[in-house]
Image (cartoon, rainbow, N blue to C red; front, side, top):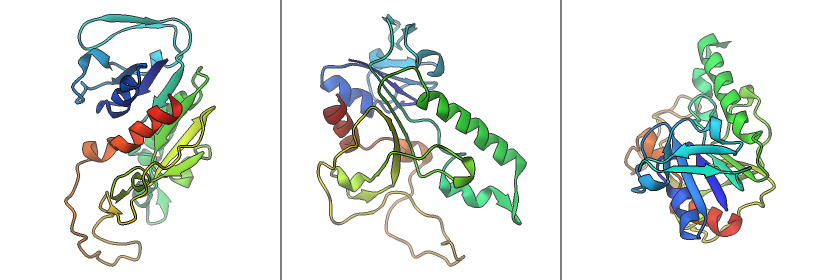
Length: 218
């Protein structure tokens, strides 16, 4: 299959599909960190998502996909969409116009992938703010379903793809992302014994989830 993994620099999903023998490419506006420039398109993914395109990978080689991609998997930026940022959307009960504008722009970008001309689509993001008005997600998954000792709720919007089935449930797990220094009631949280993770690290797909995608959808 020809598979495009949009907004992915880590190449976790791309590599998992490549290991299954698929013609998969990661695509992001930044260089890849997964060690396979020959599979990475450093460019805006939007012009490519409907297929019928010619592109160049980071190794300088030119490739062509005739017709639609067989599958599109997208990880659009979540900063302005995620429910975790809802607390910053309002100040004294009033919506901050600049933040709302950015959220609507992020929504428009998200929907380009979900509405692409492709028969099989998966779009991944954290739980979105209700205010943004994204379509209902199809499934919510956790890293501890796929062999990782962490919780980090991730939503999947699926088109003509089956729900991901857990592959290795880990009973004991902890949050992967720090919830902040205060809880919803303004009380300081107790330190939970894990290191802080930068946004780039937090956004990477867990290998177990990437492998499940390749095995169950490939």
